[in-house]
Image 1 (spheres, rainbow, N blue to C red):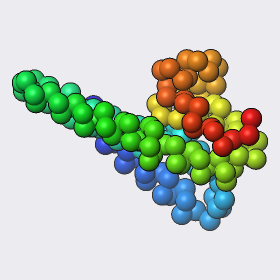
Image 2 (tube, rainbow, N blue to C red; image 1 turned 90 degrees about the horizontal axis):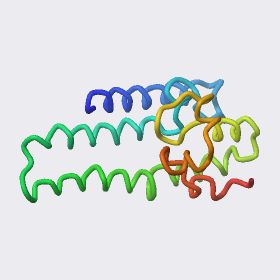
Image 3 (tube, rainbow, N blue to C red; image 1 turned 120 degrees about the vertical axis):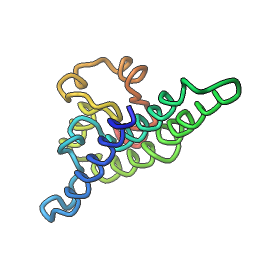
Image 4 (tube, rainbow, N blue to C red; image 1 turned 180 degrees about the vertical axis):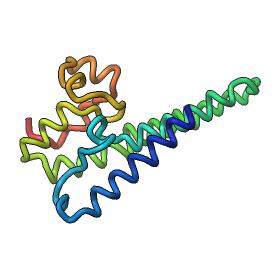
Length: 144
């Protein structure tokens, strides 16, 4: 898990850096590479990485040591509800919320878990909210 997480995070960060450094992408949102399958693949990698560390440590945990589970849980809470995805979604919605292609991208691209857009777009909203972290707070500033 750790290896997959670090690979996804590094790849996503590099793809976004390359995208942003290209003059023809000025004023556009990143929707290439892993960003085609997730609006925040770097956060997916980060979360997967930390859960991987926890899972790898479980054979040696005893008693109160199991509290180390709070590390990946705390990270998830921060990224999903506080400083990560909510802030970036709000910023992107303000910047691109009136662009039809962005609305389609947002409707067909998972906020976190890497999924093909065609599959994600077909899923009912209740399923996206419960299982795929598509929380209403990620679109609270988007005029529907």
